Length: 157
Image (cartoon, rainbow, N blue to C red; front, side, top):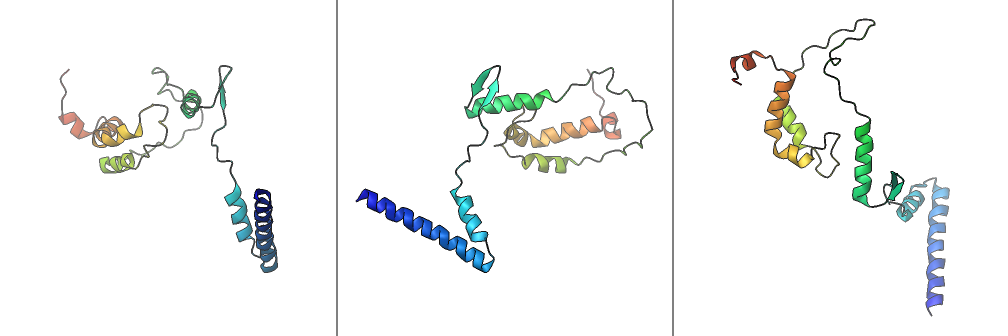
């Protein structure tokens, strides 16, 4: 009984697929067939296992750590002595002063997806969201450290 049912289901399935395909070819509309093919795909495993220091990792947390390390490895830290050094070559126009609005920075920080991995700084998005106002003020002051308002606020060390 099971074998007969299995055969009948398989026959009905292929009859259905054949019907979709033949209708699509007759009408010039292959969308239903491709929609069916896409629905049958089952290869959503995500990132395949990764090798690190000769060991293979398949756990999601380990793979995220390996990818984060790879991402961070392409960034370099500037040497303070050479950071402001100009390279020889044709002069390029200087960039005008940037206008940073703290409201815009707060909005961008609130739009971060906390489910995404941290960047090379490893600061989680949920932390940036909860401290958005403070981070925006620090960001604005770091971009414009010599604004007249900053000069009025004398700091004592």
